[in-house]
Image 1 (cartoon, rainbow, N blue to C red):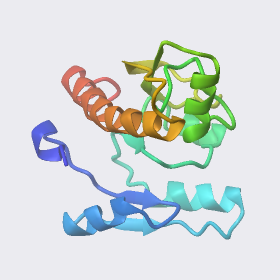
Image 2: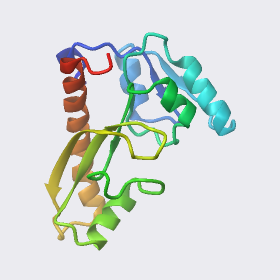
Image 3: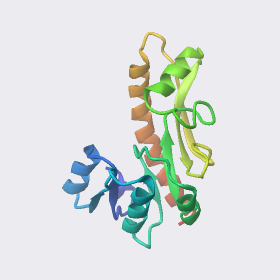
Length: 172
């Protein structure tokens, strides 16, 4: 939605499942590839890499859940970013996704929850932080409700992070 404002071109949408992004890509004339999840993970990522145009400046993982293998992290070093629904390094790593993150935040009685946009490295959720946004935890909410508020912040933060990277021409 912000591509005109950011003056960027989205050359390809690659998904591992049918999702809302597919309809948005079709509406905006963005090519789309649906990876075959039935193949093994090495085949999945081989297919992923085959579909990436050579001139890619930035790979944005937004809702893409499979763990990127280290060889792709190295091949595309500094060009892959991801969002995460916590204030990393807290509540990151294997198994920490979706509502599980907010359940952990609330179990720990944290005052703040939030989201992070970070570079992707071989270690899950261990890449350098680009931007973070903290929000106050409201204990009258369920973890799902907190997660919904954080999801909205993640969407805004992702645009802000891309804007920052374009402005600074970091890794472009």
